[in-house]
Length: 485
Image (cartoon, rainbow, N blue to C red; front, side, top):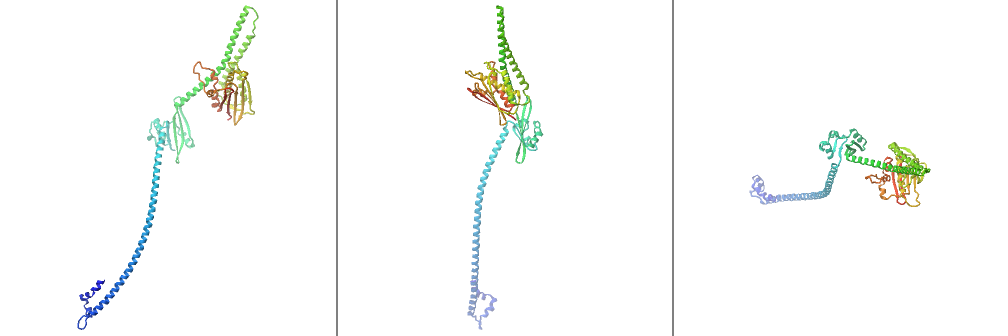
C-alpha cells in the first residue's frame, strides 16, 4: 500500500488519461504548481495512510479474535483429546483385563476339554473292555452304542450297527421287543434269563437311561454259562453232602440199636447153648430169666430201629410240602418224644435219661413252617447236645437240657441249651459247614455233629437265623429266630 502511495504522483504524469488532472495544477503561464501537487499528494497520502492504518487496526483486531477463537478451539480440542485419550486408556485397560480373563477362561476351557476328552476316552475304554455285551438304544430302539464284545458276539461291527434298529442290526438277540417297551414304559430295570438247559445261560439286564431330555435304554447281555454250571455243580455237591450228612446221621442212629440187637441175639444164643449143655450134663431145670430179659431188650432195640426208619420215611414224604401253621410247643413236645425213642450214645447215655427244663412263654403265636424239616432240625440239635453231654466224665455230673420259647419283635425265638462239653472256636467255625467223607476210615459220627443241613433248612427254607454261643466248661446254647411273616 505504501509503495502505491509513493508511486501515485509518477503514475499521474505517466498516464495520459490523467493529463486533465495535471492541467488543474498549472498556472496561467502553464507552469506546474508543484506545491499544490505536493499538498494534494500529501493529503491523499495521509488519507490513504489513515485508511491503511484503520485497515491494519481492524485486521489486527480480527486476527486477535481469530487467534482467541483458535486458542479456544485448540483448548477444546486438547480437552477432547485428553478425554478421548482417558476413555481410550480406560477401554484399553478394560480390554487388557478382559483379555486376561479370556485367556484364563480359554486355559480353563482347554483344561476342562482335555479332562472331558480323557474322561470320555476312559469311559469308552471301560465300555469297550467290559466282559459282556453292551448295547445302547434311543427311545426308537435305534442303536447308539455298540461295544467290542457286542461286535464279536453278533458279527456286526460298531459302524454298521449304529443308526440301525436293534433287531435289524442283531436279529438273533434273545430279547422280546415287548419286554423292552415295558421297561421303557415303567422306567425301572429288569433282568431276563435266557437259557438252553445244560448248554448255555444268558442274563440280560435292561435299564432305562436318561440322557438330557431323551430317554434311552442300555442292554447288558452276559454269558453266565460257566458260572451257572459251576453253581449247579456246587448246589449238587451241597445236596449230596447234605443227604450224605443226613444218611450218615441216621445210619449212626440205626447202628447202635442194631448192634445191640446183634449182641443181644448172640448173648441169647450163648445162653441157650449153655442151657443145652446143662440140660445134657445134669438134667436140671434151666434158668430162663436171663434169656427172657435179653430177648425183651432185643425187641426194644428193634422197635427203636423201626422208629428211626419210620421217622426217616415221614421226613422224605413231607419234604417239600407246603408250610403249615403249627404251635411250636406241641412240635417240640412231639420231637422230644421221638428223640427219647431214637437217640442214644454208644457210651450208654440215652436221651430219655437226661433232665429237660422247659420255659415256654404264654400266648405264643402259631408259626408257618415245614413240620418235618423243623422236626429234623430239633432232632439234630438234640443229637448234638446228647453227644456233647456224653463226653463229660466228671463225678456227680447230671446231664441237663434247657428249652426256651419266647416271642419278641414279630419273631419266635427258640433257645436250646445243654451243659455238656462246649465247642472250641475252630469247631464253631466248622459247625455249619457240610461234612464230606473222603476216605473209608473217616469218622461217620462226625456227620452227626455237623449242622449244615439244619442251617440250610432254617436260613433258606424258613428265612430264619441260627447262631451259637459256647464255652468248653459250661456248654453250648443254640439261638434260633423265625419270622412270623
